[in-house]
Amino acid sequence: QVQGSAFLAQQCNFLTFRIAAMPSKETGTITAWNMARPGKKNAEGYGFVAIDGVEDSKQNNLFLHADDVKDSKLRSEAKLFGLKKGQRISFRIQEARSSRQSRLAIEVEPLRDGGGGGGGGGRDRDRSRSPRRRSPSRRR
Image 1 (tube, one colour):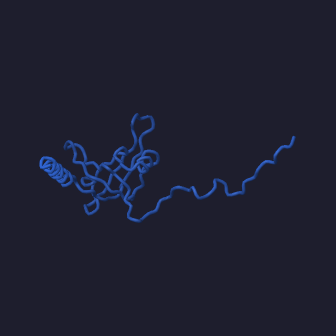
Image 2 (image 1 turned 30 degrees about the horizontal axis):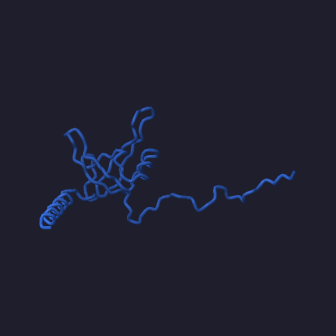
Image 3 (image 1 turned 45 degrees about the vertical axis):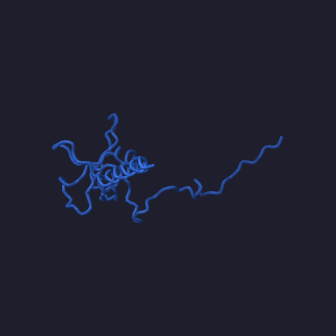
């Protein structure tokens, strides 16, 4: 019993450390989006993000690749149509691997703060607004 509780305490300390070490989510705005070039293999599009509360400049903007979008609906939108300039998102920041690269926006999700309401669904309405017509049944 004592060994089990010591092990549990050790696991709790480990998890507390892991959570504390994780960087918090940031918020920002899409500043530009570039669609993939036709014919390029594995190219899905990319863009740049301005972080809220930080001066908007090329040095401060983050690079965002379509594959780094965590939300599946937003990822599909990014790959097929691109993300819209001004779109609000939340994300984590990954530091650049070298001095020649930009910092990355990863684990990107749409910011759901009640603003914006995009389109969507359209399941409430029939495809055609005209009444459905049936062909007369044949009698034999």
